[in-house]
Image (tube, rainbow, N blue to C red; front, side, top):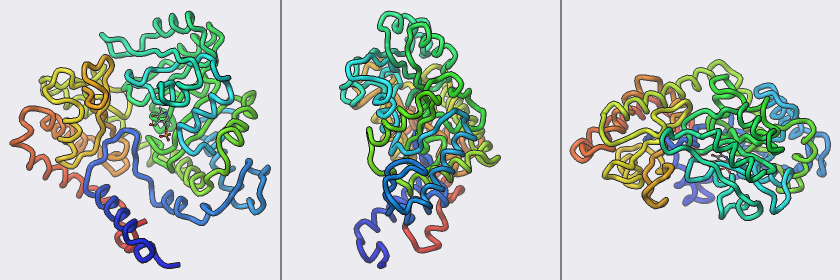
Length: 421
Ligand code: PLP
């Protein structure tokens, strides 16, 4: 029962260093968030010891009476929040959730239609090196060059011609809403099933700031740790008719024992997501992304914003016409204390390792307490950082970021408790 600092000082130093990094810098990776203390407590709890193959009330191990309670709470809360007939909270990650859905609904060689990675889709939607791209015949769709938006007529044409068994709607770097009703119609026209991967925007859906895909899709997958702000992991919502297939694809199809310490953290997050404070946070998340887009465009210089703005929690800065590429942009922001990630933009003239885009997300900072004034200031800071004025302004920008971070302290209880957690 010796503390971590004694048992393993090297790992303790990593935890301390990471805590300081999170406290002193501004997190703008769109897929990240900051979990509350209650979620940290679950994930660092004795539930990690428990094997619980199976589902609540139907386990292959004894001693599951307590984890049955938390897993059932997670399921019930998810249903309360999102609706849907059936929920599986066991996928270890978003990728596992999608793999389980494919496992349940497709046979190897079947046709899967998803948004191309370089147009904003996710690896698991058919990227060539991902298991989805290895097992299934992939038919990608993308966005239009002129509007930056998904062209539903094109999606319909591709679907008619390729007759997919499953269509995936969802994205990792697309700053607009998807028309779920139109995707449903297209799926019905060509006899396909529809999966909506709402990993990125689930938090917005939870509070009604984004339409819900649940009434339209056969299956909905999500992560719990992006806009939802909870424990790292995945979840599947499906129609009753698919419930058994989905459950058996998750376990024993894809996974063994569920991570019950994480599932408890998911339950906590789903409870918090039903609160007024969470709704306010999502409102600030959205408002913040709009402010960032607006401030980036305000300079009237070479930096663009993909599709001209955003309806969600992220902005894709378009650097195709700037001197700096995505990697340089990422480095400049890191230099002044902002963490973000470069991203290809559709029709990117630069190679993926360099790219011409920068994905900027507001969820973590909204959780930290940022509102419109702070996001507006941050938008101005980023605009200057991406412009030719960067070098002379660098020190001042770094100081402004440090001040913004200090104004919204993070995990103070950890320092107070002398724990790295
Ligand atoms: N689906 C989408 C749309 C995502 O953006 C992501 C993660 O970035 C995932 C699935 C995969 O989630 P995970 O990283 O938990 O496997």
